[in-house]
Image 1 (cartoon, rainbow, N blue to C red):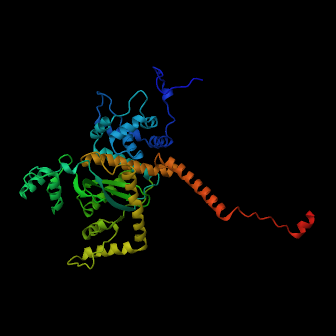
Image 2 (image 1 turned 60 degrees about the vertical axis):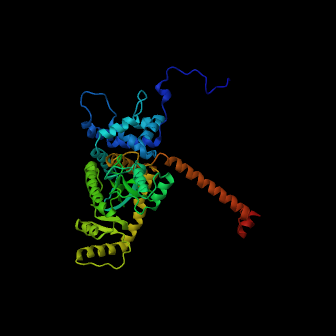
Image 3 (image 1 turned 90 degrees about the vertical axis):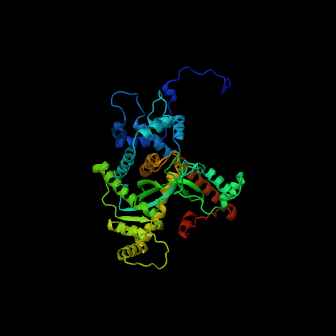
Length: 454
């Protein structure tokens, strides 16, 4: 037998389709089976038909392929559309998942971004609601208790690019003018850095903005850095862990200013999901309980939610003794929220809030790769996030039906089994070395049995 070489051999001119077939990934096969059973492709094609020419024109990217490409961003933990396009072109199993035949190329990143600009935000919202309808039909939506929380998304905009709102000066020019006003004619980089550190007021959204992404706001991130960012807010069903609403607002907006809009979006999405599920809908109750952390606590917020029919369980910060001048209604709302929060159900909901609300952020942003967005303007970011979080909800359905919610969970289960076996073997080895071999106990025969045996 001659030794084969990796390079230098003449390749075949033609390769058949059977030679390129892969076994495909069992997880993506299951996802496609779920989407096909629920009629995903006809639904999105009907939604997107108004964005395409009816008779003439070059065939564009199919809506089913486009939305599956965005779902890959969650399942594979890819943050950019370039990364999605590269990953899809590199894998035969993902080509099968997208439904791209071997005779065609997988969608390029420019094709994905062009299709995103073509399809409006309402259609992306409808796809998110469609996934909620599938969860409703599977009994994974209860909708009674809604938890709300928010986090920051690092914007695709640099701090060095911000300019003044009044005269358009850059931050560098602004520091140079301050240095010259203080007597430094030719300031060096060290002089500018020292002057910037000594300034009391570093920057304000009222004075500065980024011309590349005006929606991004100067924000202090959770790690202490100051960066341009957006604010993402989730409404989560605390009975099942499904995300029922996703909103993108300015990072400078306070929690008390956004909670009511997020709860209204959650109610609307749940109603639309019930219409999508139709006779399969298993949701019986209506949204009536709101749970949030102390950042959402406000007199006016509690009173407004009470008047709209919400029963609140919002953590209360330590403010000391409060005064209520002509605010009897606000005082009653605050005291009622305090009684509910300190009760048995309130304490249980606070524990659930820390578990079920933080988990979607970890899956969607950390392992899902969306902590830093590569898109600009809130509309584009909202389009990507809606389908991204729809993939998170779809993973909840997959985990319920098949035991795994992401393709790499199969590797994790095998690794966990191996780790358990290794731990058991190590424990047996250590026990043997410490206590010696197990003592063998001889069976003791009764006297009558011994006599018969003799």
